[in-house]
Length: 260
Image (cartoon, rainbow, N blue to C red; front, side):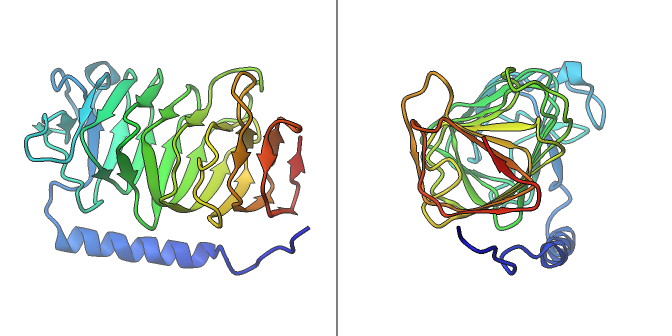
């Protein structure tokens, strides 16, 4: 058993760094940066924030200047202007398939959709930078087949769902661009399903589970031998199909953690 590292995750340092980045952002960039609300068909949105009935759905998220202006900024539709990673991408209303028209960048993905959002383009990446955040409402299954990169924190609300339900986040991609991932869910009924050996990064990536349930593969998938992440369970649960799923380790157990 590997001893616990004490200097890898410094919440105070992360907070200070994030605040400094925000100050730079608001003083050095245009007013168009901020929260942008996804609307796949770029019609019908109103309000700031918009009403759920007017946004959401399927469509193409592209970084190029010729992309469809399907992002609502609170008063009008615009193109995605997150090439520098300065924007919050907010997904609410109904879910649907979001196809990436190339690599995109954001600082945060926020999910309030009532049905699942499916990032279905396997060859493109959502870059979230060094302090990226993904916030789930955790009442539906959002799927990431598109790739993720950066150093990210995954948050989710709620803590009362059954392990038998399919309402969780699912990561299908080989996310070798992830350098560190913190899973910081509200309770251990919050679940994330990992369907690829590199779902949380290449070998050596830092992975810390403060609360929540990590499922390694599902009951109908082929056996998976997961990358050797530097994995720390600090209050979380790792649920593997032992004898089928393989954890290449190392794994550090601290606080009230468990394997099942």
